[in-house]
Image (cartoon, rainbow, N blue to C red; front, side, top):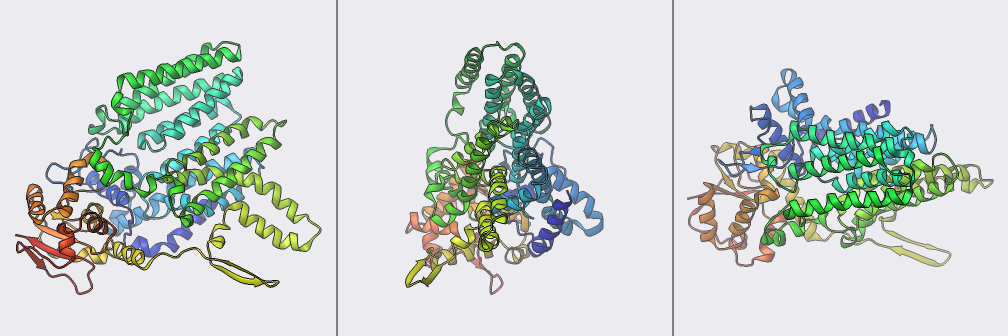
Length: 583
């Protein structure tokens, strides 16, 4: 906790400029703050519709209130002293750092247990170097990913816990808490349950761990559903903890408890029993909820083709450029290797029963990268215990070497490699000559066009760029999908859509408005009562409309062909936006 406190002070100092300007860089972070504001303004606990998108009906958000609570509590605490605006900025700066403390505790406990009682500082250092993971805990990253990563850290600590009841309870509670927030970690929760089940299959003495895990998972999921499931999540949807997944957790927990309580003595019989139970739960799921056998988002084929299939983080890591892929996978590969070596070294030691589940879990997390790149933060987090175990072998060998070169340079190089921090140096350009041989390596820099798009996208998301829009009376603005959440957070205006899959009609309408004819745009604007048009030239989303639909409404607008029913409105000279009144 002392280490966490020092990190909090450093990150608040280092990121203070971003905190001051409320730099919520992701659409989900903006929507989270909008959701908290609605709660504090009196919106119902179970009503999670965002009424400032697609007004007056509103825009369905499939999240829960769990992550809203610490942000709202800090705003209420700070508001009397600093005012609403500053209280929101401080809350958004501090709230993401709260789950970091839990993540550090989970990793420290795992490393102390499996590597050495004094190895935990190295785990903290390695975690800080896990860039993809740490981005989820940075100030202003107020979305739910940090809390789910914290639960993942507790899960791996519970899997390695020698005390069966405590370990089972930790895994069950952490899984239930994470699922109550969202289903992103459902594969990890399933894998954790499978590992606990396999431990029981292998060793009947693990029955207590299995039974406590089953009870806490089922009960925790039920409590999470009752307390936090929104009105929209009371129906049989597939993308949140609805009655669909609640029934799976309760029935699955009942089977696991019965297996642990009445399981047979023979190992093969326990395996058969576990397979039968899994078959019943899986078969029943497919029979009762066939709509959930496909994509949980359940979007239309058109929306999947034009939007969801193109989300970068949903693509496998091998489909990304080398610069990004290597940065993400380096530490997970090291962690898997370290966990495998530690498991082998502990094959005759008591902590073999702790290392085996950790190895299985970190290997599973690494394999998830072959499915979606968004698994990167989880894979890096879970790689830390294995990386520390590897460092605990290599670094003492280097430090105890008779060679001064190995003791000094070897130790530094080994630390950089084992921690994964060498990645930043590998990706830097190399060009030197040694003993007459030239060594050159260059990672392709971003293109000029990419830099222009990135700069425009960043500028249009800033508070100084958005604030002049408040000079105009409040109204509904037609703008890009990715600008919607930021617009409603930084101005008093309403928007049509944001990138949230339950609202496929609105997303497609905005896409059609910018992609098709000017007359079609005007009709869609009228449908939603939009009276102004706001665009950010060269923003990433705008390039999609121009590339896919040359001659469409936005492409015409970009070439200066403005319909007579659009009246351009003044903005500051350096504004990155263009604004029109829709007559």
